[in-house]
Structures are given as structure tokens and as C-alpha cells.
Length: 629
Image 1 (cartoon, helix red, strand yellow):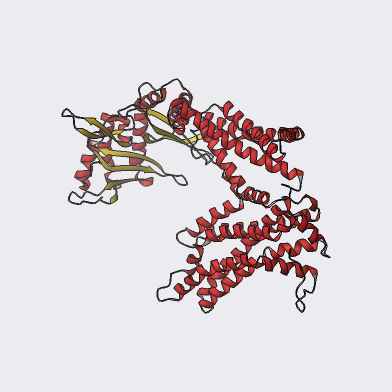
Image 2: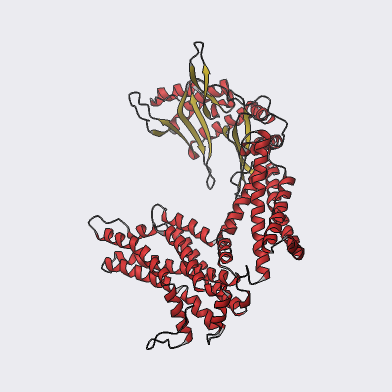
């Protein structure tokens, strides 16, 4: 055990200073190693900047180390702080440190500063060397923001690590606390979203992004990645968000250090070697870990049970049928309680220890139940939600590229939505070999948007399965004369109002002699041609209805011909499975933009089978040649 006394002639002027210098000396290798790591990166960068072909922006080059700065500062700060306070985990060392003629406050301050200052010095020296290599010129100024942000990160993670060190009686449990602080909220969000997606697979992009701020390391990595990869660099918005987050987390780190000082002043040093020095902390950590593992286990069990029952990947089955909300609500609670009991039995060295932990077990189960109800309940509500037509401004169906407006058309879309939502919970139909996703989206009058996606079963030929209620509902909707009328009204709205509309064509350039993929081009139909274009398009609508606005898909099937040769057959069909003759890599977008509103586009997919009159008119009027799919 090292003493705070120095050799004769080098004795510290005060016990606190002596303790500070002693701790710094014993962990000097961490600070020196951190310095060397950054010198190995900064010095070559400085030489490259000063060389004959310097990078355009030194600040951008320094920004590329952002993720390394965040991760290394988090790891090294914990190692330094935990090493500085390592004597607290040894009962014999605690007694020796107790003999130092210092108040606890002074002891804590000396050791805590020794866990941070060497790293700050290392960052300062590395930055000074970088600036010196550039002759302290204009390019050297780019190191200042890097140095300031780096120092604030060390303060952040150093403060958090100091508090975690005070709550634990062993280094491994201090590490567990540190990991929970930096990752728990993010991991909880991931497991909650996974469970949410199983209960409500129709909800697109389910997320609880608001919790990421509670995981400092994860949130800083997200922000620094967006900032460093922004183009053009620097992006003022990303830079401001990152700078604000670094300052806020640094304040949090200082607050954690202050709380750690209070915890140290009241710490029972005789509990060195125990898992946690405060019983309430032990209960809280065990409960948090149990709930996290409980949600993860519930998601895995539900996914496995779906895959085993239907012999199909769980995600596909969940999209088709969903998961029982009642089962999804109960399982996380059961697993959380079981995990808590196992943890307490292990830490209490036997099952008998659970008798004293029954209140904590009940509390953990209650918290898990509330969290499960909040997650699963919101998922079930979102899956069952169907908007009121009077609240919807515009609706779209992905298989038909038409914006549906007006209460009558929106009501039809909502009826389709209700049928698809009801059919997704029917599990008596056989599991199809393939599916495709149908997306229904709403633009609400309050400015928000809502999207739901549903699985449409396909047969072996790639067509919507006739035995599926969802597929039948979609085909009935597409073949309804009201859908054709909605397409006509959108075409008329655009082509009869040249003042606030535009018609553009996107196509792959025709290059018959080229061996490479031709580039995509775009062009515009002139307003003077709107009347002639409308006549050609109306002829196609008269013959093929809403099929003109249905996206085209390619399907490749394999078969044996009459000679026994294995061959591949590629066909192109629309979203209803109808084969389309001579489809082209081209489409026409009809856009009607009202002042202050988003564009509402109708897309016409060109082919000889569904839009022959439109294709012929485009060729004769503009000379377009189209590439067949």
C-alpha cells in the first residue's frame, strides 16, 4: 500500500496534495497511454496538413475522430476513476487510508481530481503538440474545439464514473452501474420497440426515440456521427446540437461528482467488498436489470414460439397475424420476476435469502407490469386505431399511386384499412409462401401523418391469394369504379389547371448499343400539351381503369420445360398480380401543389399493356424511346 509521504526533500506541503500526487503517480501509466494513443493519430495528421497536399478542412479531419474521442474518453475515464478509488473496495486499505489526517471531504476531492486531471493534462499536451507541429498557425486553431469538447467529455464520464464508484463495494458492480447509466435507456428502448413491433406490426417505424438522451454514451455517439458525416461540413444544426449536448452532459457529470462526494461522506467503509454499500441501490440495480432481461426474454420467446408454430420466420408471421396483447403483456412481468428472484438468490447465497426480499420482488413485479402495460397497451391501441374521415386531409394506398381526397374517397380508404386490420388477426388461414406489404398513409388536417402497413399473401405465381380476406379486400378496392373515378378526378385536377400543376416524366435513357446501365433522365410535359396528354391518358383509363396507376413488379419463377431443361421465367405484373405486356422503365408524375401544402402526386407507370395510348403520344410528341424492363 502506497503512502502519501514523499522522500526527504520532496515531502508534500499538505496531506491532501500528497494523496493527490500519490494517486496520480500510481496511475500515471493510464494518462501516459492515453497521451500516446492520441499522439499517434494527431502528429501524422498535423504533418499531412503541413505537407504539400493538405486536406481542404483540418476541422473536418479532426471531426472524423469524434467517435473515437467519445468511446475512449468513456472507457479511460472509468478506468482512471475506478483505479483511483480502488482502495475503497479493500477493507484493509480502507483502514490505512482512514489513518491519513484528512477529512473525508478533502480525501474525496484529492482522489476524485486525481482520476480526472491526468487525462485532461494528456489531452492538453496532445493538442499542444498538434498545434506546435503546425507552427501555431491558422490551421492549428482547429484543435481548440476538439480539445474543449474532449475535456468536457472527460468531465462528463469522470463524474458519472465517480458516482458509480461510490455506490458499489466491488469494481465489477461499479462497472455494472456505469454500463447501466450509459446504455440502459437505449437498450430498454430497443427491447420495447421489438415487443411493440410484435404486437403492432402494422405500425410503421415504431420508436421511442425520446429515451436516448438518458444514455449519455449512446446519445453522444449518435450526435457526433451525424455531425462528422454531415455534408456539407460543418452543418450548423448538427454542430449546435452536439455542442449543447456536450455542455449539458458535462453539467450532469459535475452534478454526479457532487452527489458522489455526498455519498462518500456518508459511506460505510466497513462494507468494502460487498456488492453495494447502500441496500436501496442494490434493489434498484437488480430491478432494472431484471426488467430489461425480462423484456428481452419475452421478445425472444414470442418470436421463437411464432417461428416454431408456423415453421416460418417470426417477423413474417407477426406481420400476418400479430401477437396476442394479453400474452405479450404477461410474459415480460413473469420473466422480470423470475430474473429478480434468481439474482437475489445468487447474491444472497441461497433461496432462503428470498424471504427477506419479498417486498422488493413485489415492487419489481409492479414496475414491470406498469412498463409492460404502457408498451403493449400503446401498441394495441395503435394497431386498432382507424382515423375519423373528418380528420383526414388526404389518404394514399401504396398499390395505387393516387392521392384520395374528399370525404367519400377517404371513407373508402378507411374501410379498406379496417378490413386489412381485421384480417391481420385471423390465424386460421394457411401461412403463405410469400407476402408483400401494403402501406396505407394519411395526411391529417392537423399537419401530422399516420402510416400503417399490412401483409398481403401471395400465391406461388406471385399473385394476391384469392383465399385471403386481405388480398380480396384490396382487389375489390382497386377494381371499384370509384377508384377509377378518383384517378380521373386527379388527372383532371392537374391537367385542367396548368397554373398550379406540373407533369414530369422519369425514364431510363434508351441506349441499345451500351453494355452498361443507362442513366435515368427526367423531362417535363409542357402546359400547352396538357389537353392532348389528357386525351391520351383518358383513353388508357377507359380501357384499363386504375391499372394505369399501379406500380409494376418483376417476378422470377423457375420451371422445367418440355425437354427437361431447368429455366427461369421473368414476368412483370402490377400490384394485383395482373401480367403487364411490355412494361417500360418510365413513369409520369402528375403533381398538384396548392400554396402552403405538400405535393400530392399521381404516378402513371408506362407500359404497352396498360398505357399504350400515352406511350404512343409521348413518342410522337417528344420523341421518347423507352427501355423495356
